[in-house]
Length: 130
Image (cartoon, rainbow, N blue to C red; front, side, top):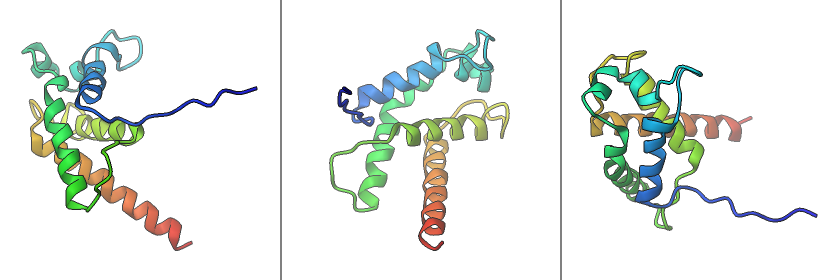
């Protein structure tokens, strides 16, 4: 017999903060390097004490504002895959493998979210027209 399990999306500021903290402290990239994602993509900023976790409130508000802009009124839930891809977009596009900026701004986060939304719309459009 199988047990039914609830699978929740990201629903709170605290959950966003925890996910970002994992990029700062728990994750390892590249594998077996003992280097976190944040440190790998932004080594100078990381050395100066910058952490993605500090953007939790900004990201929460960006997602909330973008939902309002698109008329979404249900309680906010961010699919974990969507959130992860947003973070990875921000890191890869702007860190050492991308534009090489020193550290992210709120505008970089907004751009990462919007790029993913645009790609999702194109994919949905294609799937509806095939």
